[in-house]
Image (cartoon, rainbow, N blue to C red; front, side):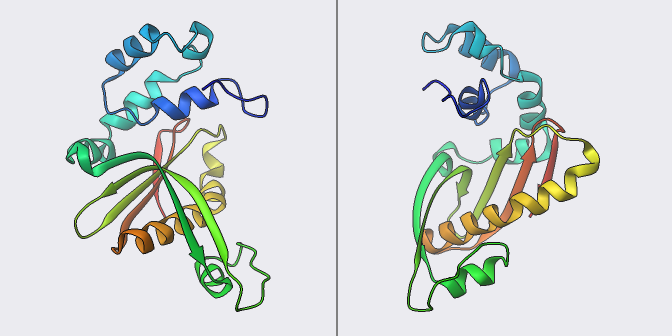
Length: 175
């Protein structure tokens, strides 16, 4: 898939390869050898940022899990009442009568579905100053909490770890 006109150059490519659990050099070689990527697209990937994440404490923790439990770009659909949404976050608009519901569809960047719990990771490609990190975490937190609630309902187990990883800063935040 190529990036659409509404996405920054390389966004689609970055999202596809941000989830690979391989070292930097192997990842770079794989991208350059694939026929569905042009050199321009491959050039937009920040291999150093990807490698830093996968060699970080959380990256190593994720890589240590059995591969069959790791789900990348996991699509989901879940139903929420207005009260459910209000409980998750006051910033999520839900001005509906109580008998109505909202269907939420999304794609979790990375979920580890363990027998008794779920871990959820969302990669962010925003570029911003380190001083803005708390604001960015607050901005993206409601989405991650909503995704966690959806996966918890679907799989019948709690999401015990929720992380946002900001590639440009190489920072992972608990949510």
